[in-house]
Image (cartoon, rainbow, N blue to C red; front, side, top):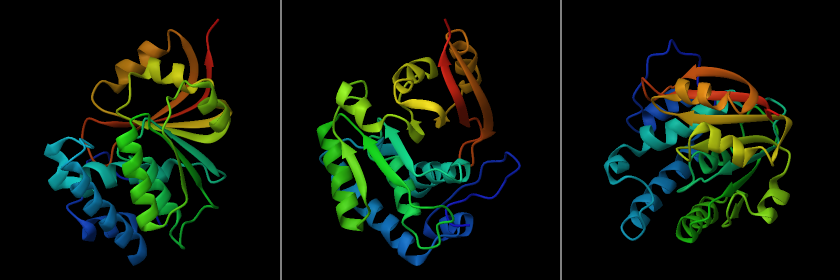
Length: 229
């Protein structure tokens, strides 16, 4: 299925470029062209705006595109609205929006809202969305602002990547997450410790998956988030 990474044995793979990405995620030529345009714009804008770590620029398809795309396999089939918090240069939100725009996308329409308070990064995201022609709402506001919360309250899915420790993420997400909202979080080394730490303040269901792209990283799939009394 388009955008869905096959089950894997926990061994990370390397996505060296477009050909590897197609083999792993089975996307159309149109989607591949959109991602190639995204890569080109990222490298252009990086010269003036610090969008990503410079050391990752030669490995965009693996470090950013594949890392983001692996979340598609964990989206609930009924998901229609997704909010990506603190998305920086658009990861994972814009990548998921590009995958969902593929004619072969297995789910229904996915409306993506990206929240990024850095005006320059938000401007970059708007340029990508405009150039590749995907419908993404980009809010250049703080996540905790009341207007932001009102705009994205009770979405089906909330995503975040390299934004904050889990307990802080839960604090930010709780106002916008309904009882059936899925939280899809990309975590590096220490994810297990963050889950244990957050359990002291919050009740939640958590399933931890091995990352497709990094041996020690994890994909956390969290539901039924609630603050403990």
